[in-house]
Length: 147
Image 1 (cartoon, rainbow, N blue to C red):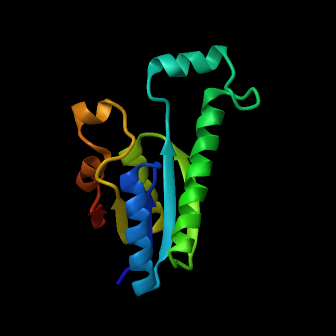
Image 2 (image 1 turned 90 degrees about the horizontal axis):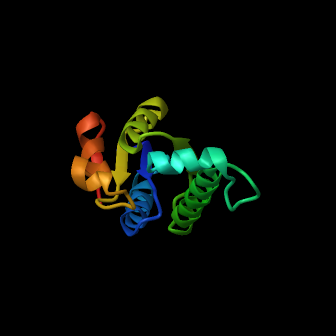
């Protein structure tokens, strides 16, 4: 049924539940799970501050810090999927617009299902422009399971 399942993971409760559902489906179908954590600056202020000061993590930029946090989250989700019985799990991080990055990554990797939480850790932008899960469903032809 499914060969490659993409799970968008941001550390939220919804994303945690999405990992669980993807692991269930992977056990049933033998599918591979690809965990993707997307990061980006949340405001122009944060972006400008990253140019003038280092982060709290070993003097790197804010981008470096966000990348490191995203890597930790993706690896945590990968471990959880394995603990829940999924055999084939890979973790990835990408910078960019959340919904567009999820959709393009799914297309690039040939995923035949995208699993997302209904509510993530998104910014107030999500309330004005629509949630990431809603945007993902409107931008792709790939089936999307919203948890």
